[in-house]
Amino acid sequence: MGGEGGVVSRDGFTKNLLEMYGRIYGNDDEGLGRWAKKADRLGFLRSDYMLDRTNGDDGDYGLKQVELNTIASSFAGLSANVAGLHSLLSTRFRGEIQPWIHAAKDRVMGKDYIPSSEEEGVPPNPALTRLPKAMDVAHSRYLNRFSPTERNSVVLFIVQEGETNTVDQRMLEFALWQNHGVPVVRLSLTRGETNLKIDEASGTLSVLPPNSSTEEDAWQEVSVVYFRAGYAPTDYPAGDNGIEWKTRETIERSRATKCPNLGYHLAGTKKVQQALARPGILERFFPKEENDGNDVVVAELRSAMTGLYSLGDDAIPEDIKAVTDAIGGGAGRYVLKPQREGGGYNYYGEQLAEKLRDNTTTTSEKRLELGGDLAEFILMQRLFPPQQTSVLLRGGMVEGMGESISELGIFGTIVADGEDGGGVVHNEYGGYILRTKFSNVDEGGVASGFATLSSPYLL
Image (cartoon, rainbow, N blue to C red; front, side, top):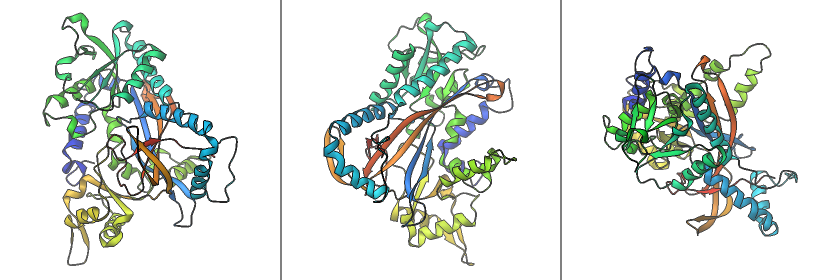
């Protein structure tokens, strides 16, 4: 990640995150991070998968991980409601949709697959229950640990200026209040300059809700900070030393539980995903001991990984071989990814090949060398899920009918203790999201306009 030929040598945004992490979570316990290190950690993680053939064109389909999202993993609220809608429609009009269901089954599972009637249908999606529940666990732990007056304790949603995805966010906010009685305040990183403050003596983070009075008793203590912004350079319009970065540091330094904190945020970068796929790395986290089953865990995890290749100074011959293949006519087998979230940043096809050609050289010994500008990217094997005929709707209107592919996201929630060695105190499946797009579309974000929300149908 760091170093002269690493991601941060070309990616200023990731560099800022990594440097802030170092300042706050360095070795000086009495420094900037004395309260941050004691804070609990909340994670809303979404692991995204596509089906891909495991043994070439004739193999069965298996799940392969596309990426892990650790910040602003969206559409839990909307997906839960879409699943409810699709469950109703698929039972109410079961006869009408059966030809579509069976055609999709044949493509995905094969004509010889025998469905299990006990499992047929759209599965329940508990995302709108499980995510607020985890938020309440973190909020309650904060109250128990630091004992603020509950009346003045709120969960803070960090959102974008001019936010367009408010409906999904509001669903989580309303569920948090209706199910747990926990209030939410929404604020942008820009407004944080005037509406957030930290008590250096206690690490308390306080927020002045927008449109409230400036009197001292209007400030409210923040128990949990949930980031729905802050994952892209556009969320920091004032620049590297601007007010948005200062707000991010103020929040991180506090004792409030962050979702995510900087460590979890950085863990979701493409470079970390690529590094974890290296031989021997998973074994460091699951060391093999007699009869402990970790070798089975590692094998199962690795079976969900696809080809991931470094383009930085840690590139090995396997990575160079993949780049050579992409330049030499195999560009359609790969995706070039920067350290970004939100959709619209990747390179595909000829654009990918051109990007690689422009940033590589061949030595007199016919050896391919990577240019420094590639360090901020990883190269990933492209996945080819089964195509299914679908009718896609957007904005209440039929967008069209045609061949489509889907990507499944699985939510997980985790709360880790800020003390006592950082043990896990809450770890739960959090529901799902399914995104479907026409098969001729490369990118896949819903908010960015490339895909639509859908639901799986079990057979």
